[in-house]
Image (cartoon, rainbow, N blue to C red):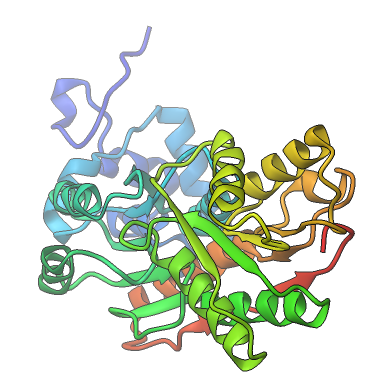
Length: 343
């Protein structure tokens, strides 16, 4: 039985080399390298011959050797706040799908909404020489930003476009989204409005939504919103906790904007259980347009975003940087306020 050979060791060792693949496919070793690393530079016919040879010989590329030679890997680092969110999952899937078309893999870091943990992940992943980073939000520790600037690798920030990015960004305006919610609540006649979301020092995106809400209420000559800050990461149960805190601190509140649909849905179901009429006694608005948002009674008013489009766009911006575009334009995606029965 033929021995399976790995990497780029000498032929006598029984390890299949790039030269073996090149000989079988009738091309140069450089062409094989391009098919593996930059397939878009090779014709479809040549790619097929090389891939056929790779399969026939069971060739395994030596990724470590290629990383040393190029001072880079074929890996992009994506850091998100949590693995449990369907929105972040949709974003990452679209990123992976887009980068895999260029033969680039993705390694995922989970910051758990901690800027310090994010900094540690960035430092660790830089040791693996990634081609670039896709990060969540525009706010990071000073040291994390220094590490990224010194590395020289492209950086795309997502989920926020309200301030200047380190490099480029693909996201939406959280301030504008919060403003739209505030304008809707004011227009429907709500007068005592609260905001429930992650603590400002942990979740800058939720803080942007609160800022937008506050601006809209000020423009409508309404009192500033009561703010309930929750410790992240949050669970669905925190929606009920946030509801309780609002009603304890301001019993006459007639509308609540929750920074995430998971919180809003839990609060809405709890209102139904308690016999608190939504929206007659208490209007509720969420953020994200989760699958359940249109299925509960009353259906949830919320802000729809596009995490899959954001994931694909962030990957495309990173590829543009890798292909030589020094400064691709940041992309501001549109959000949509969807008014349903809860507000």
